[in-house]
Picture (spheres, helix red, strand yellow):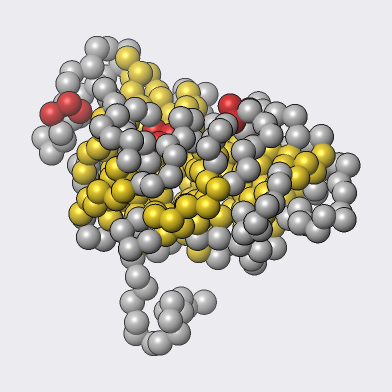
Length: 312
């Protein structure tokens, strides 16, 4: 079937999608790297069925941050929400303008933030200073106070936004909670002694009418996608058991025993379209094949039989 242009006009080219990844370049330095996403899944592979390895592209920009958890992104803005330089300034990188804006932050600075996208906003959760960040001209400006979570942030296992555009669901190791971020005086609601079946963030897909994410990191489900029925927000609905969910038929990563899985992320790029990013290590006896276009720190010779880290 011929592909239809995104706006329905014949001859209109589909707008190229780009993925920006924040990579740890060492010593509290993080690089933002740009990848062009193909319109269709890549099919080029070598004789062994594996995609050809390439070097990482140069970093578009580099920023200092104490840890990767302080990066938050929404739309075409990437924010360093906490820096060691100043508590009241937020550097915001615009992927389209390639400029860095220094945005004042008027609210309290979380000491252990977890940033959850919900309805075009960011819910910044902390043990003692949770808030809802709203978009402004340069990044994220106005804030509304949110009730602090009734669970330990270190115990978070999964989170997702409800299709109502205002409610966020969070699973800890022991239970699942929700919060209506648009309701004044709202409190966290405990749904039951069960967990959402995801590892990290899940996305609502309207075509499936379900949440979609990476399955939990148990040995039996690692490497599969998972879909889950949306939990109702009606206060009168009580769920003593978790919602129905199922795994994909195909295992998407962790198939090669020579690859040591480090982490993965699922990025929602449109209706029924996702980009899966996997981070893993392999042990190679030959470290040859370096390209002259790499940055200096990426050209250091590696000893034989040392692990090499890759993105897929």
